[in-house]
Image 1: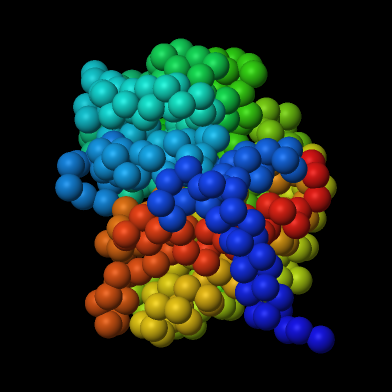
Image 2 (image 1 turned 180 degrees about the horizontal axis):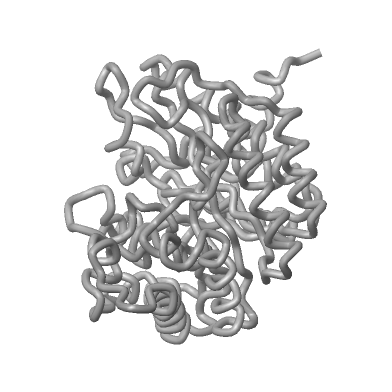
Length: 381
């Protein structure tokens, strides 16, 4: 009997041979596309894309080879940073849509759907400074409410039905305690109130869009408090009648996202299935919203590193796609050189990471094949 490594390699080799005989649309780009494979099972595949500072990892949209991969592989895009408050709102009176509009225009040119990320990133580190120093006046709760409602309505009104899924609130659960984070807004308005207000406002502004709570609780060991906090949040929202449709699971798997992380695969799969059962049992859909595989603690050798990344990805996606509630899978970048992980928690040996489906030479990697195989093996939605 072959082991899992042999089975994965055989499956990858078989599909790759089929892809090569299908007249790939570009050098090193197999067909069918990942989105086409996802569509066959009632899902979508897409990626984050950035229109940030030229010459940085946040400027993938500037790269014609990156755009080509997006056009070939993806059916849905998500803004990497362009709709976050600290980018979109440099001051209280300004909405700078230039970067976000570039992503929207590219998606429209290629007939792609768009996910909106994010209306309220409820984390004090990622709010603009002016929200902290803003004069909330004699009625601070009313002013905080006005700011949130105005912000959400302005963005949703601008893009209308062109954005079909919104990360309404992002990362409001503290990973270490499971409690709700405090920000300038929640200090004035209340923790629960800021969440409820955001979702009700988003539903009124975008009645046809999927409304999502998005967070990075993971299947790895050490995330138990985070998972429990997210479950409490979702249970409370459902009990209060808050209009939420799905949980966005960021899915930054592999090495832990810290400078002192050790190990690569610490998945607690039984525990994660219980978490998934609880979430889907509430009637919520699932979005894999920011998928990549962090290889910080793997050996430098590229073939073995890529194989370990692909195997972990396949295990994770097989589990996640076994739930029919999982409809969208979005990579957090398609090419290694544009991954946010290149500038966060660097490897001890200082070499570049390989967390995405394509390498820095724009060639597909075993991770791309693992994603394809997971779609092929997944049950239809």
